[in-house]
Length: 75
Image (cartoon, rainbow, N blue to C red; front, side, top):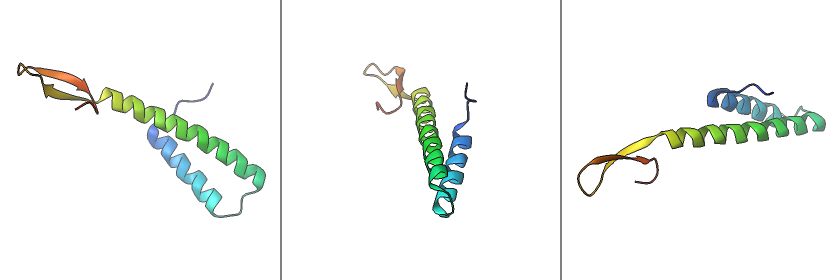
């Protein structure tokens, strides 16, 4: 079972992978491993962002003037 990482940890690791791939001194085999890891990290980070967005709610007044909660992005 993979360890759950935070968004910040995933982003930092993605930056490390990008740096290694950009320096040009990584073998093809290692490049493929880094690519696969980066793909998993991107998926994980996107999932974390989606979860965070779903938790953010905005207060909006309805027609009767009452405050109600709406999911972020529906306003």
